[in-house]
Amino acid sequence: MNDRFGRPLEDLRITLTHACNFQCFFCHMEGEDGMENGLKKEDIILVAKVAKKIGIKSVKLTGGEPTLRRDLTEIIRGLKLLGYEDISMTTNGFLLKNLAFKLKEAGLDRINISLHAISRETFKKITGVDAFDKVIEGIKTAINAGLRPIKLNFVVNKRNISETFKFLDLAEKLGVDEVHLIELHPVGLGKKAFTEHDDLNAIEEQISRVAVKKEIRKKHFRPRYVLPSGLIVEVIKPYANPIFCAGCNRIRLSVDGKLKTCLYREDNVIDISDVFKSDFNEEVKEKLIEKAFMVAIAIREPNFKYKL
Ligand code: SAM
Image 1 (cartoon, protein in one colour):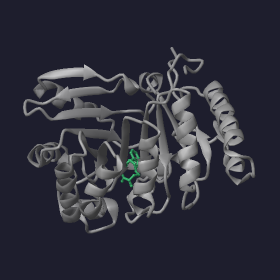
Image 2 (tube, helix red, strand yellow):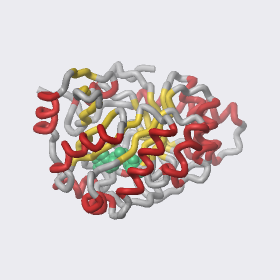
Image 3 (spheres, rainbow, N blue to C red):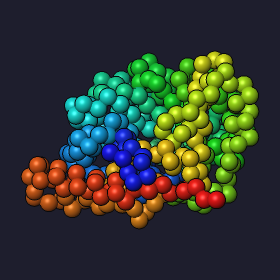
Image 4 (cartoon, rainbow, N blue to C red):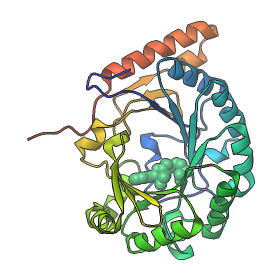
């Protein structure tokens, strides 16, 4: 399904909970308000079922911290049964040491782990938690469990920018497949934290000089650099970037049951929570959710548009 800007809808990002065991000072909370525990597993699976029917190819689980959902493996199992071939999750990695193998067994294909520091001190300054060593253990276990490609997310800001290149060294040593250097977005707590924003241009320039190859990914037209070690570095710069928006193929299911068409927009949403609360049978619910997707696709638009 293409929206009226010709952008295909291929990826469903699901916020499983707003609960989190970290307090990252810039957290965008996926552009959602409130402190909700999340939709019921059955409602999540139903939306994913309809999404698959209309052509969505991949599902990403997020939060809050998705590993805090006790029914996480059941949700993943349900998604896999729908036939999705690309189910991924973004996590802070704190609970991965115990969970990684169970998640893989349930059907999780790959994982993004947030690691915004290379030292215990910076890690605590960013997340509010002294858990650097535990997250490193989590990353190692995820590698052993085969949740590949394993990607590390590093949100660049003034507290960690000096560690960026050492972070790439650490990623190489750990043996992960890819890192995402992410520009801080002015969304959620990120609005206040935006004083610590950096545009990543200087960092990208340095990376491009040492890279052996540059590619442009279809999703968000993100630039990807292959380092001599084979590590892939993807640079994610969405802010005020119409090219990024032009390549957006994503729709979101919020924690309180809304189809959200853009991280940045609070108005462009379709509320389907009443469908879940209703007594309609599954077939009727599916039809209503499908209609909601059609409306969401119709109103979907790039947040940043090119202007002369
Ligand atoms: N708790 C999980 C985690 O830490 O990965 C999942 C939720 S978190 C909101 C999802 C991703 O968004 C993480 O990689 C996180 O670092 C990133 N993120 C959060 N706030 C951000 C911001 N203001 N700008 C850019 N990325 C942000």
